[in-house]
Length: 253
Image: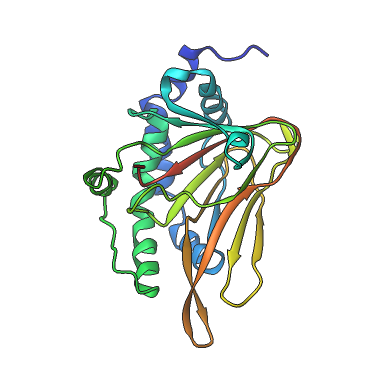
């Protein structure tokens, strides 16, 4: 099969596709997603984007003009593999998902902060939150495209980037497990006070997204609510190639 041309890729990700994705976001069961986030610190959204959109997004990796920087993980001790941060303006599909998912997560984020005794609250619209980031000097876009090959992996980490951090983020698997790659599972760990860490392996299919805690989340204990520290990563690929897009709602210094 011939690889899609840049023109075909960009057409697939243009305005109509972004509107379609926005419509899909509005129809999701956000009560279920909120319940899963409260219970586990993550929630899977099946088939958030289509296989055609997945292929088009993965195809952007070769278009260097779309990105502000490239990171080779092995050079920094982050793991193996690489990723690129998008520049502004973001591709329509990425921008559309970022702005349409955010308002649904705001009530969860504000509830979590209240439960953990954190004073910060988040505005209803993403543009207002980005303005807050930019006023603090966090002006660099953070959505990114990740590429893994055989034996690549991503160490457990947190995507913080500055003072203003939205406590939830989104990752979308663009490749199909078993067909495009093997291994490479999305992994979360929960570090609980005075207890051993709890791992969570999140199974995803092509086009599925996972919403998860960036830094910490509240957990109800026998003596009240306590705060657990969260990290995420990707286990070692056994074979093939894996692409993922990450949508982080705060910008970076």
